[in-house]
Amino acid sequence: MLAPPKCARSAALGLAVLGVLGTGRAAPAGRAASAPLPDPGTPLPEPGYAHLFGGLMLGRGVRFNNPYRLSTVLGDDAESLSLTATYLDLSLGAALGAPDGLQHGAVLGASIALAGVPQEVLTPAYIALLRLPERVWLHARGGLPVVVEPDFNVGAELAIGGAFLVSGGLGFGGELVTSLFYGAASHERTQTAIPIVSLELGVVVDCEVFQ
Image (tube, rainbow, N blue to C red; front, side):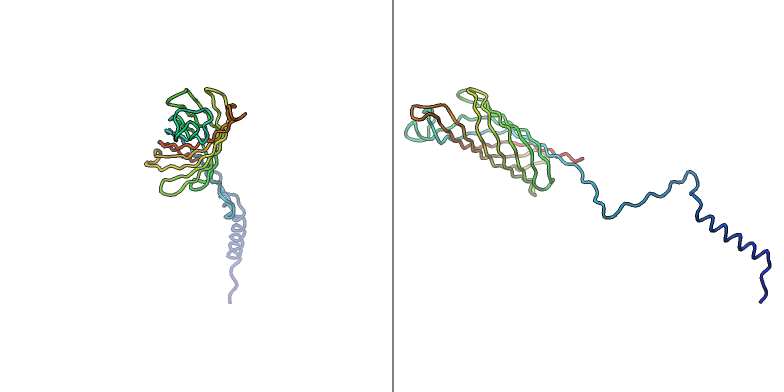
């Protein structure tokens, strides 16, 4: 077999050197280097979520103790159960949590009597809200109703309720509310406890914010 000419061997050696140098050469100016791929095991940040809601409801309650002989009684004598005045309740709240699960938040309610003695009550409360399929939510809340008028007083309140959304942001809702207030002394007792159970029905507004 004939040996290759010296020029051919020199050319082959030069091409090999250029190839080695070319593999270690930096990328030309103006061409961005490839960014490293993210680790497949790194979780992506979850989007932010906030649930805003409010309601406008009419309610009326039943007193289970009538120490002041109130006129609207449910029985044969003045010591029977009595009805509260019909009242208007406005509420605004916000909650955080899973968009399709359990959420925790706060709500502020304002109640105004529509008949009888003027009465206003403000109720700051904690609320737990559960979103269900088919545009339904259920909630439970606990708060401290503060009677502003006619006489300052602070009670305790627990409520359960829910709502059905007719559209994306409007629906119907209701609550069953139990509350307890301590009142002034009467002829029979030095201090009176007045438990009340109320039913509220009305409209709700709903707004979900994603970030």
